[in-house]
Length: 386
Image (cartoon, rainbow, N blue to C red; front, side, top):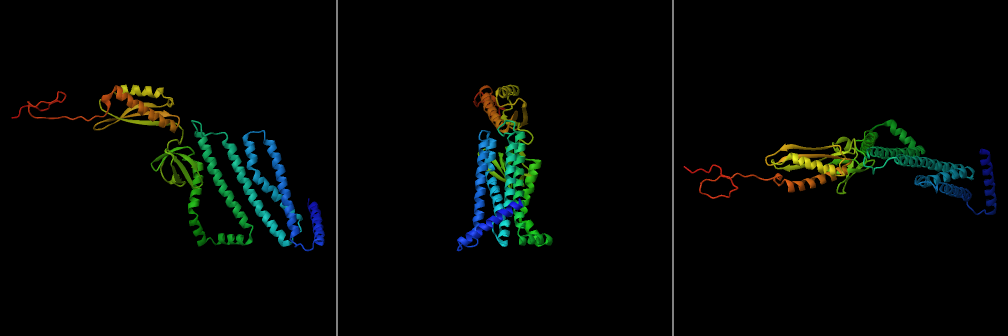
């Protein structure tokens, strides 16, 4: 291979000398630039041929393979162009300084290409891995677990790849490399300042790793944060987006879910127990109310058949608190089931138990036996005065 490159370089050099004898007015840099441009075009043509061939191969396959070829289009083009330019630099009549500059540029391009390929491979792996799970299922606990882990870890890996890529590019320059070594060796005040400056970034980075490993929240979890009920819509590298029930978005830093308490309604499973509280008069027929509530729940398509209960949970001065429990497969169905129970139970109470509605009792005491009062008012202590 080296002999072939040397022969090709000798032929290009001889051709450049012939061109210079024919056109002596051209600058010296024209021939090297023309050689590099020719190899650049060779790389572009090679990319078009390879991409055309790959597109033809996956035309009759499913969407995954077509999207795979589409996603690798740009990295493939850059790789073939860099390879062609590397051959061009090897055979072009460049001087020592020009050859060093070209090789340095190709080295930087190669580092960027490697980072790009790694990032694309991560995206492809995530797509392949998540094809087995769907968030649209009613019991999507396992899907939420894998989607959350994959998205957080891919973002963290993307940041790590970017940092390593930038560091590797900077280390190719002697001045920056020496500065970095001296900075690490000194480890003085500059290191402390940089540490404080990057404290929020490092805090979110560590919080992201903790969220990916421990998973106190997942994509599509039903949570209560800052008094707002909603679902986890997106987890980024620095914040979490909560979609509130009225379509507002609550933006919360990642560190919040590590440092502050919050409610997660779907931490272990998608099923939830819905609570309906009724405030009724003390004369309410609890057995009749329990029987009607059981019929309402059993006829509902939202109930999962696991949990049902009717209990008197509190007595107050004017009313008693009756709690109805019923479970459903996910948060949305639980909310709808609670609304259905409220609507049908209040209708039943209005029709069959109007006396069970909250009311205020008054006892009126009057003096004098001759005073006429309505028959429904009881007279207490109505004897003749002394």
